Length: 542
Image (cartoon, rainbow, N blue to C red; front, side):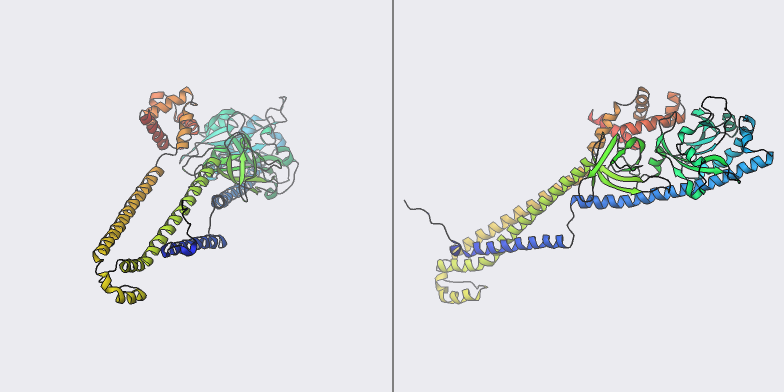
């Protein structure tokens, strides 16, 4: 039994050799192209793309925060000077000393009547959620905790998201507030406890100028409320450098979230402001957060520990889902510890981008290989076909040989033309088959282009669908609604307007806004339009 002998490279037909040469040439060109991209830095990895996007977002966020806090600090210094002037004028007009205010409710009432109007005006014109003035005296010196209780006035904006917000009296004489159309806060109290301001007694003993003495407090819960806030605190001193008290502005968690919402197209972007710690941890409860302007974001919770996750990116892990982002240290004032700015996205989003990038790169490589092989086959066939055709004519002993594009073959044709005539019919048949084969290839290529266009159309349509993760968070959030919030949610689903809901539920507009804020937060939406869109999708699925 004879074994089939393997062909060596020298015995390969010309068509196969030319195909191999062109395939190698195509591979060399592709590799050279990618090496050139790497050398000139035009190849973008998912990590580099995410790092650049977050870096740009960080620069915008950092500028917003520093500019805001610088303006608030300047406003606080002006407020301190105004309150010092007001107190000096008040004492001079009555020919009394600052110590005479102690336990004198009538003088305190007169003082607050003079304070409330300029405080309200300053509150409404500054970018803040509250304003306060604490005088170093009390009308309750007989109580056991009188050393921590101080008279003063604390005003807060109610509904700062509206064009004409109202003002509430958080601390101070309620009758003074009512006489000026300012209603008491639901957690109102007469005097201010210095426990709200850890820096109170250190500022009392300091003689540093206002522009160097101001400080931003830690982020903490406001007494009696569920809202966290940071305070700008500036000392107030008299003309003889006597310590009158402190004043400043409040920046609440909700105000920060609204004021610093970022103009970005990044999905689920979260931006944090927190105190810097050497432990490499961020306590979300004592941090401010914000997200995308007119978009959804998931505020991190618990304690986040951050560590390097690449050259420029950090990984944030804790009680909430894992995040990927960048962190930068900043200083808010000369007297504060450093703070951290963090810009991050959900790691699941980052992993999705990496997966998509891998698929795209793989598809690109496959397409390049496909076109390389196809082009090699096409050009090798196109170059060799005239030679093969002439050889076939010679083999068939054609009597009439056609003109060739290869001069060497034409020389042979002159010698063998008589023999070509005998085999002309067979040659025409072979030519027809070749044309049919090319037509079939063209038809298959046409079908391939149509299929590719359909795939592109379906991919585009898919992008328009609702984000499944947002929708999943929406469905999960429904179970967390209280009975009252579920009732309000049902009113919106039934198509009632705000006015109709107020009449049906017999509640005030401020109460409805409070429920709205809770519903939006739990369902992970930021507008009624988004809520109704997800609700409609939920009903269609049911």
